[in-house]
Amino acid sequence: MPLVTLKEILAPAKEHNYAVAAFDTMDFTLTEGIIQAAEQTGKPVILMLPGFIFDRPDAQSMLDFNLNRIAKSPVPICYHLDHGKADECVKAIHAGCSSVMYDGSSLPMEENIAVTKEIVKVAHTCGVSVEAEIGHVAAPEGSVEGSVADASKFTRPEDAAYFVEQTGIDALAIAFGTVHGVYKGTPHLDLERLAQIKRLVDVPLVMHGGSGLPEQDFRSAVKYGINKINFFTGMSLATIAAMRRLIEETDGRVRYIKLYDAALQTVIQCAKEQMEIFGTQSIYS
Ligand code: 13P
Image 1 (tube, rainbow, N blue to C red):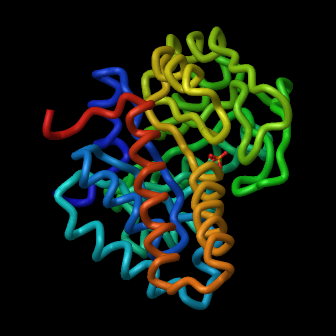
Image 2 (cartoon, protein in one colour):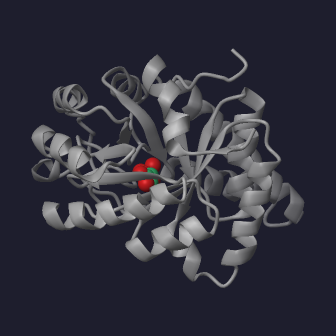
């Protein structure tokens, strides 16, 4: 199965009302675990690169590994840049990503539109999909500090419709009550807002900040029209906890490969659980 674009992977999700899981990777274990989860279940998956990857000295090895691993997989995989700046979107296209998220959500709307439009022009010329965000999901991505959702930054339905119409993007990330990283307090999703946006916007809708939501919130978000769910902190914390348990049980006298296996199995299990909750349909069914 070739690498697929975001547009291709989300079309059946929109038609059949499920969400495709999107997990960030930043090393071999995460890439391998996320793709093995997809292969074991026959479900499509979105493998996401954080923008900072390009500044790392080992970036090229990581990028080469990801592309080779995706090419060998029998399941549909979208290779996507998460929260990119404009230059990172160009780097991601060069690195073989089939989709980029340009994140101009902290800019005034017209500026966000102007840059997003340019990214769409370049990306679409290269056969690459574009996700963008209007409104703003709180806390920097990857944050484990915790925060609360800021309702003043939630996406306004009329802005969502205007933004999509002006930019020609393939998927829209919206803010309606989630935060990146750990929640402070109990999350409250504004499902009525999501339903209104869904009525006005024709492209698939994306929910960022999946970690920490109760299962029922995921199911409701999908029911009300979310087709891509970004999830990272929960997987990262679960993996660290599994390694820590093993280190404590053995007083640190553990073979390195056992530690790696514990991490890998946790990533696989966590990815499978989320895919199940998101209702992701298998290509075998
Ligand atoms: P969490 O880390 O809160 O799951 O959010 C991930 C995300 O939205 C990445 O874009």
